[in-house]
Amino acid sequence: MKILVIEDDQQAASYLAKGLKEAGNVVDVANDGKEGLYLAGAEHYDVMVVDRMLPGRDGLSLVQVLRAAGNDTPVLFLSALGSVDDRVKGLKAGGDDYLTKPFAFSELLARIEVLVRRRGAAQPQTRLAVADLELDLLSRSVKRAGRTIELLPREFALLEYMMRNAGSVVTRTMMLENVWDYHFDPQTNVIDVHIARLRQKIDKDFPTPLIHTVRGAGYSLRASE
Image 1 (cartoon, helix red, strand yellow):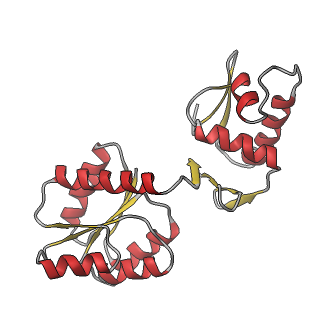
Image 2 (tube, rainbow, N blue to C red; image 1 turned 180 degrees about the horizontal axis):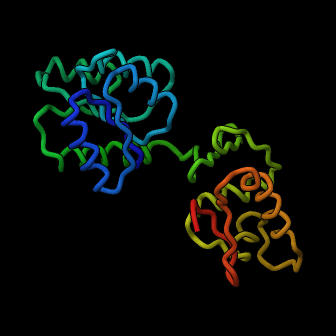
């Protein structure tokens, strides 16, 4: 998971980031409300952990602004304010869960996992990302490092399939069946041609190639060799 922690207490923020990273997550930290609001709007996160009392902009208004802008990333509020009224305010502001300080890290991690699992069950996946390559299934758009890449429909379908199987070897047979709907080998170089076109568009002008040839097997889309 990619998690944004917005916490002004440096010690608490370091503790949270360390524990979440050790659990296998990617973590960004913002130490005030203004920086947190900027990161939340500029990056895609699976969940946000937000302290209620923040300098620059408090956690409640931060989440309200995000919700008004259409950002529906799950939010777990952290706060020393633990009354029923405080929890209700947090939920009404757009929070999805509320955890009172002090807390056990294991409980925080479990609550985060529940929020992400609940969101995944409720919403179909509409965005795929590998390294700095992003594919939006709703707008049918592709970007790498923020640069828009124009793809033909079949190129888009092939890239989508490879991104859904990122890190795994995708064989010629798999691509023919899932992208072209061929259940036989037409004995053409159609796959090689489309892979070459994708490489020209998503790899050529960037320092790190994402499409790798796995000799004797097929291709793999991943961040590194």
